[in-house]
Image 1 (tube, rainbow, N blue to C red):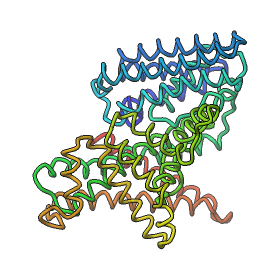
Image 2: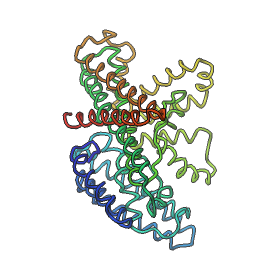
Image 3: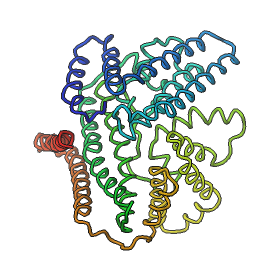
Image 4: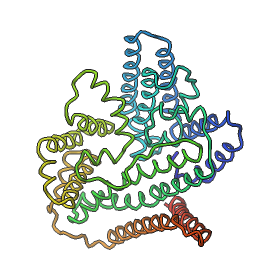
Length: 442
């Protein structure tokens, strides 16, 4: 079940928040877990049972690691968990196909399982590294893995970072207000901006089978990229908001601005917690084996990003660009003005986005031909397409204007503090109502 679902927004969320703040402290974790299980069983009931079984196995391996002192046995148990996680993902990919069979969309269906496996592995590795102590209850384990506001599309939060909050946390009124603001921003991204970019993407991908203009091809590539960005960042903003509301400190997952100076710097800031997970959990094991090479970490990050989708063409493309950056491209780009460097890197990213999304060599080449002036015309004269593009830019401008207005209203003059505070909440209400309208009508 998605956070923008009407049932979640108007039934599950109000009931959950009311229950969460009413029950005693010792039952708050259980309240979160009940909602998490309810959403999981609602969204994909049969496969969710398999996920519960795998997490039980993870908890059992964690208990064994805590009990044994022999380091060889402990390492073997860690690698056993990693092996089980890899096999679980292979089973999901080849047996289940994807969670689209349960009504979830493309991004949801392919990213839930990698994030789920990564959370399980972090639980076992943190116990092995003695980062969380020896007392880890099954409720702690299940809450870390299935906590609904980080279970769906992240952020990827390691167990050691959230363990203390699971045991004890406080909820302040200021944090609740900040969490609601973050939730509304994320809600607008997913419900409105993601929908509008999706409209452009669908129009272009349907039409390019016949013929599209150069402008339409580039707009379609940009729409695919920003659709993924608004989806990821929107749900992560909502997760951070839920965390503040319930007392958890969930880390930010996206930089405040895009970094297009190089492909490697972009990915470091595009999905921060995902990248940091591999830097913290994968690279130290490589260092111990003394096979860590310069830039190999970026190569590995790119590989792990796209392997989640089993997209061979994307793996080849991104790795090729990383090698070129390592050899000479970064040195060449450093000599040109920054604006041209960022444009060039953004073009590389859009090409990679097309390869990543289409995943068919013949169709990829066909689309790239349209992007690089293979089409008969430069500009698409379709009135419907122009209206879709204008509507998207209208909503995007509205979003940034309101966001800027909120930031300005927070810098209030004490004399007009109440008026500015009222205006700030009015702006949030407008964003929320627009998002609700899209959720109900789309």
